[in-house]
Length: 277
Length: 243
Image (cartoon, rainbow over all chains, first blue to last red; front, side, top):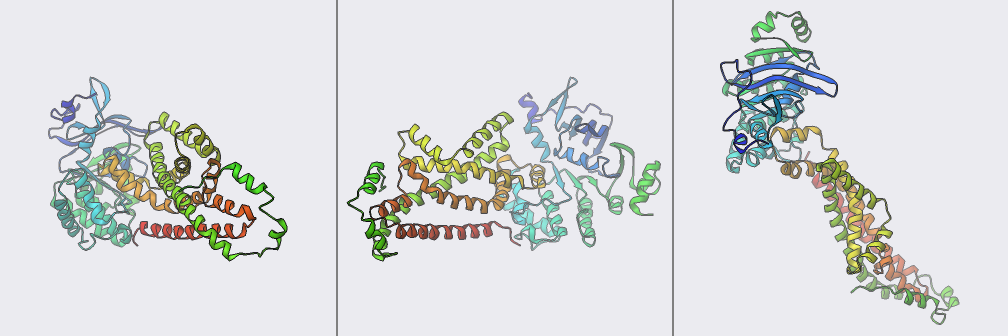
């Protein structure tokens, strides 16, 4: 069991592979994810620097979404380690032994991470405002007055200033997703995970949602891990693109490079299919 | 005041030939308004003091305990959940009448009415727990994932997200069980609690005039069931999301 000092996180565990000069905000070390006998990710190592925006591309089933879900602790990590701000998220390496971290530590790291889902996942039994202030008030312990004020300014930001008292079911898909973005941002996350956020939307509202996310990217320093099929958006906002296939990163680089002149034949083929040329 | 039936008294009144003249019964009118008006107050008192009391308190116990069982089945570690499931199945699959008699004669320090309320409540809790379970299962996985993504506590997740959404789909079934419990109250006879139907029988017995009393009993049941159904309907509408 971790000692209280461990739980308080006063001594962040040193990341085993500290080859990177900057302190990565997300680090995957030898990550393996299997569902039963089906290995989805294997020997996966990568880092995301603070403020960096990384887009994961690749064919469906290549494990992109699983990576986001592992970071959000929605899936159980079956092998390896994930570090958030240098601290182990699910398991720590203690003299070569893989030991689960305390619930408290996991929760404290998790509050720094926000996620926007493909299916929005707003709480239908609450109003828009209640959806947004629930976690800031009851998880972060912020005064309700402040949380409400912030919620209103976020709703302004996503273009829904008059929907605070609406119920999610009365909103369109695009509006619901904008509320979901506001809900995630209300927690002031260091890391924002975007899991195919426009895939369930009508084509004409996709740009509205993407423009809001572009603005978030431009005006904040939030680290983003993005899974999307919107290649134009990926090119605009990301610092780095990682191409996945079969649970491995087969190529990574700056978006201009990947989208115009990829090294790998597989990447070329994938982009050709997605971009439709 | 609760009128309890003494088995011997009932038997005596029926067997006593001096009280009833069969020929007279046959020739008497089909419906006797005077008799009906005389019988009504006593029956209505029995309805309020027993039938309604047992149903209302029994429903409250069943609704709360049923939810507790459904939640325990979800959150307890496997072996403990298995025990809860087994006990609940046992109670659900044995007859209510047997449970009434068993509890009444095992816990002799409890008065019959208390036994009735508890047995009705616990018995129906096992049914309602199944309804709640289905309701909880119907909450989409994405809702749970959203609570994780927002780091909501388990208590908050249940109280603010899962239970309100689970209840929405369970209210009609829970209402039906409440009405069904209401109609089971005559079983209280087996532990000598005279609820309305038993009282009706007692009033009718000396003269074999059952038409009036059982008609009244039926109308009182209907008069109580119908508003309950309306209430459930209204609650269902209130719990539905605004569209």
